Length: 456
Image (cartoon, rainbow, N blue to C red; front, top):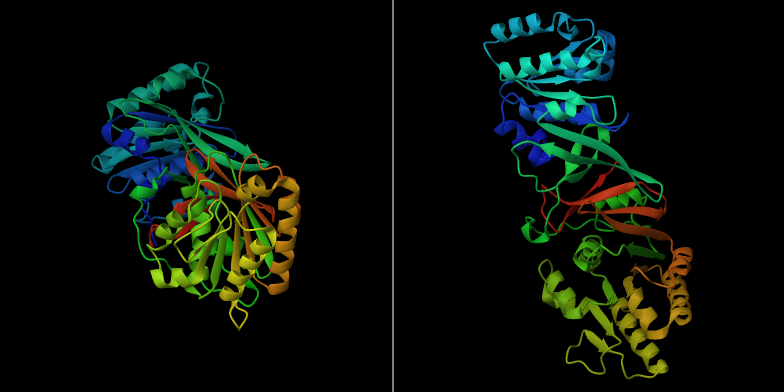
């Protein structure tokens, strides 16, 4: 699916250019942070009708053709004219005349300009500030807006001259790098979000806008296939990361940060639950603290019929002594031997005579609260062994403050950590070790289908 470049850029920046004429956006950041790719994506988004000029004073023709071959070719997709260091346009002594000639030739079709880097122009003069003021005056007098990439870090006179200032950063989570953008100034524009995470995956700048569950477009769930060796996670991207999905007979942990809500970690849990149920397999759940069986059922009933849920989804409720619902098994007043028997009865029902696989889900905070640290670990070790023998699937949710954290990491086959970065739910793998990925609603297939975006 071809996407509009403006969807990749924070909306405040697009509004800045659309609501202002003859303005300058200053783009700053350390080497390799993505200044050039961000600026080019901005230019593609802005120059759909009017022409744009991109000037690279430090690149010669061969370098431009090698590093940005798509830009050096005439194409209706980008509507940009590229100039390199060998051209008169890139020479500050010739620029004004060449620019005026070009504007006259194109009958005013030039509306946007990009300098990368602007330092290469100003550093040639004894008074770079004066030269920059001349360039700014030229931009403003011709009603052409400009993006200026600055190599020099720190605050300079350009910060005061520009109407907008954008800073690109590198961030870190447990040794895993991600990129973010901060809006430091946008004259005349209301800034709703000052920080955005972004990726340069496949050489294209793409930022991620904060989104709300209630505003996501909802569509039908798309079932993903299991294989002989793996249960699908329900997310194609996660299956690829894990080498095929959750391995049959494996125990898998999702460790959620303290700023992750239950609705957010369900973005990763819901897909595997729906996939299991759609393949006719059963689920046995001990909900995490704060979750209730009825709320989980209500969520899943939006995508799967009630009869399937009645037959395939059961809850062990350790806080209740009785229940009027057949799918909620009260465990609150039963002795230890009785508890084990009740659990075995449900498992036998789910597996049937053909020994079908089932999903054993445990909210680890619930278990630790009920029976303590050592008994929870012992219980999990037994569960992990059964999972491997029966070739079924085990999933546990770990929340902050869990005392058995190191123990469950050691016993797990897959250990994923879920965090929130600038309002975007993200995750990364500790086992296996991976980079950071953002979770976004599928723009084509709709929620609850999700797209996993690598933060490279």
